[in-house]
Image: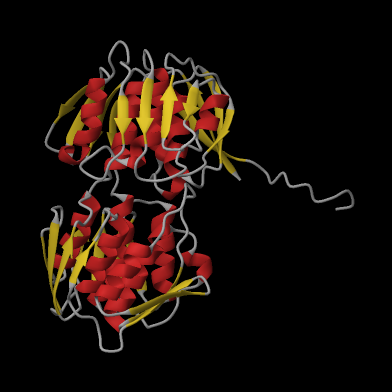
Length: 431
């Protein structure tokens, strides 16, 4: 078992590089299946979710070669119509993209229901609806998505009554090999949706309108392999932006797309933080005090739900009361109890969608845990802003989505380290 120890209270200063986007990488990796060829994917983050994706692809017949620390070659010509092991599929949420890829290529798919972070019910009904619109018969049997299109997939109009990143990406992946034109109305517009579309276009697909309110896919075109680089991770960048503000520091965050960060930058500026934008970087400088603010999570280009726990840390530190409204997921405030262990004064509404922060918190050192990926990042931020030593447990959840977070923070002045703790399980008196 590993833990992170943080001796906080130090301003962070210097340059920090951002890795490839987790949410784009996992989708692109599964999308390589429809190319039926060799793809080279660059700028992959070195995180456990990427490792799990590669293991799943290998289990269905893909050949994987590591070319460099963040670069892999994937040959999907030998992928066969088989079910990936449930033990792998249930590790990550993104495994459901394999269903869209298998359905598109083989006209049938059997993929176990996905895993991932536990912060509320995250149904896949919109994914199944999209597959049905493309001509597949879909059911959930024995904990697996089972889909089949005896006559192949056919282009159609798909309307999502709510924006879903996963369903949008899955519909795109499945539709690129479907005969005819598919039109997706009210798709998600997140940057990783665009990245997946750009990757497939590089493989020979004809996808137009990704990032807008209508996506049009001219399906059935022959696809081929390509070399493609994953876009920078806006959530990792946003986490480091908050780290600069929370520690009263100054960070040059390099290798980003500033436009993707606009909702985060705008809220930080509202709180008194200076954010300067460059071509591929932002410079974040903490103000003298943090002004209280209200945040409402929304689909892109609104404030991202994956930055909600990190912003909660700033709301604790801000001068005065703040309000945070979560509109995307249920039960995403489970981390509040961990911040309360550090003396934060927070009240969560009975409906579970709002939290109220008194502000002016002086965090106290404690032992806390990561209850999910982004909540774990929030614990690291709170620890960095705390005088004294804080221990963070369950850090495997953090490493699902952050590439070398400990090393990156150390390089900009954080006193942070990862330690391995012997298994403390009581094996019995006579063992």
